[in-house]
Structure formats: structure tokens, C-alpha cells
Length: 127
Image 1 (cartoon, helix red, strand yellow):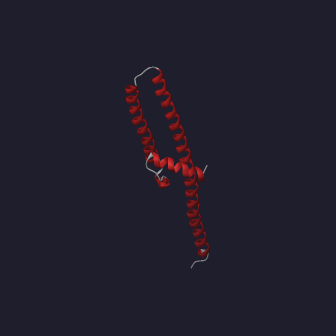
Image 2: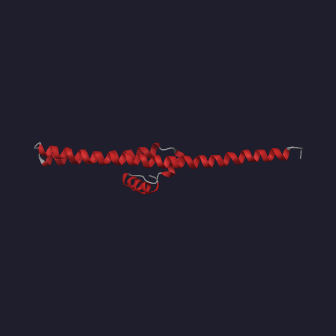
């Protein structure tokens, strides 16, 4: 073996191992960041959902006070309920669709109910 080749091999091995270890650590740090961000996003959506629910209750109360018939209120409530459920499910679907592919395994839910369960679990761990 030529002189200095042994040192060069150790140098190359060091560079190679550095790249592998730093890549794994980088992925781990980003995974933790994405997991925290997912919990924060779900928390904001949960707060929005509760506020929307309260606004709808106020809407129906105001309609009742304005003298609108209970049948009309029920029809409007049914339409609002369907729209509200669609909004919640579409929001979760968009999060899943637009989440970075490399970190999709962090998402352990596929609907609103699962997302809220995940949020409750993650609040214990992360927040």
C-alpha cells in the first residue's frame, strides 16, 4: 500500500461516518420539530372548532329569539352540521396530504376524532 494511504482511508471513513451520523441527528431533530408543530396545528384547529361550535349555538339562539320556526332552525342546523363535519375532515385530510413525505409516519390519525385523540396524547408529552 502506498505511503499515506492508510491515513487517507481513515480520513475518508471519518468523513463518511460524520455524514451518516449528522444526517441521522438532523432527521431526529426535524422529526421532533414536526411533531411539536403538528400538535400546535391541531391545538389551533381544536380551539377554532370549539369557537365555531359556540358561534353556531349563539346563531341558533338568536334565530329562536327572532321568532324563526323550530323547523327552519332544524333545517339550518342540519346544513351547518354537515358543513362543519366536512370542514373538520377536509382540514385533517389537507394536513395529511401536504405534510412532508419523509415525516408522514409522525401522523398517526386519518380523521378528526383520531386527530383530537392524538392531540390529547401529545399534550401530555410535548406541551
